[in-house]
Image 1: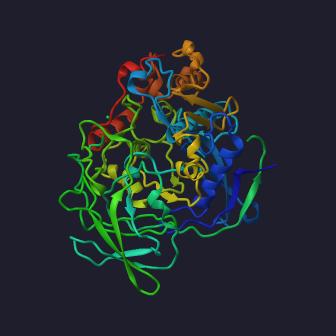
Image 2: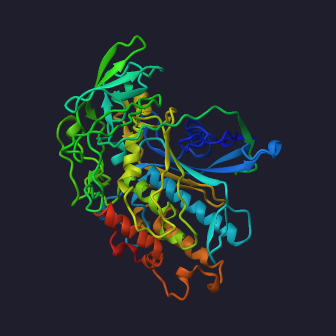
Image 3: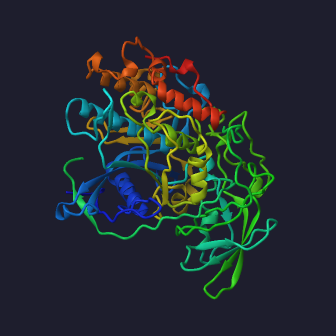
Length: 552
């Protein structure tokens, strides 16, 4: 039996920008969409044409020696496998949060996928503890583990993460080819000359998902070109607190001399100067672009508006001006996700990805067992309004200056690419099939989390609890989904039972720990790294009150 969710790809090395040539962004997206369509039940999925959702996934990339070319170290196959997946677009308001850890506060797809990935990591550690096949091997440090050589992880999201990564300029009149731009104008009116060599899809990007955002940029003109390669299917062997936008320790932002990449449906970058030198943190510079066609005729393209986000700036940080057009949003601010009539304490997905890019996606509890954090090496974004420069700003550059981290932590240069394959249940796809007579288009109420674990891999949640949970059993273990804090803490405690106390990680030895909060705080290097990130970059990050972390 063959599966689109598990692929073996021929390797062609890496290009000069460090992007993998072992797979393309479209291959990653295609795998995730195939997994979504074939591995998840219909229960909890959107009602086609009436509901939409977001999708995220984690793909394991494992290099495998090519037996046909054993003498050529550059000729390896790479095995791709979806190991976690999540959907969802909703959050729980702060008044409905649970002090017993029974509820999932944030059910955005990026979060439900990452929590499903935690289940996968716990399962793989258990396999390692019991001398079974695992992605982990013992490290040089006693009672510590590390990933096997050749294993990395790709994070896929069908849409740009909410928050700062979605603050993207709208490009008008872009039905002409765009490839490379260079500055030929003044500060008052930035004009960019564009060389044509590829057609761009039509202008429907301007009407694409309306809940996206604003822009202030730095210069980075790199783009990845992934060479073609042969692909063969692998036989399945089984089922199978807002940003410190202006931080004292942060260097000055690049002003009008910076460049910007704007991705317009065909992955061709457009460099443009977009920043006001005197107000670079709060608005986008109104820019004009000159477009060259193959006949060297120029056409003006203006950035007159931005895609807006529902995520709100955190109190105490820089706030949106809510002005017209490009002046609606500020950029680089930490943001919280909106709730229905009840403000949430859930940070935006852009902020969480930026945090994971320094601290790792494994969290504090699993860090007790690891020699170094588990990072996402690549991020792939599905077909949607997109800017490579905006993604880099939101996930990497906001924290680029952070220093004095413990040795195992770093600000990682995660590589970012975009796929041109649309998600079947995206808001844009749902709009194209929407019948207004059946009511307005709404986000799907349910969220899914799937993990490549042998027991009960799927979770379906509504309002933070297991789907179908009645009011009578809310706040009890019977209503929990498997990715809530209480359930993951229980898995962590069970993992310790496979070790004798003398084989505990050093950070857990000779300590009488009881609560979830105590075990998290005992991961001292992780907490030190997090403290430095907050002190130097994310000073207004909303931290969960200790009252909500005292369960055991």
